[in-house]
Image (cartoon, rainbow, N blue to C red; front, side):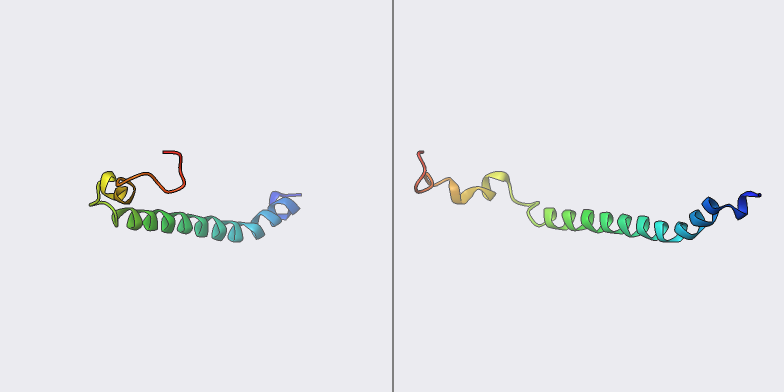
Length: 66
């Protein structure tokens, strides 16, 4: 019995395309997530951390112990 007619080889050949599509779609999703994170991070790139926290610097938060 040669390798081309074995069950394992036939099943591997059948599953190769769906597994490749799954891997490529996962890679595309990861790249989209990275691009979205960069876009969202770039929206606050000009603000310093002090300016981002400005609403909290005028006094303690109501109901807190501080």
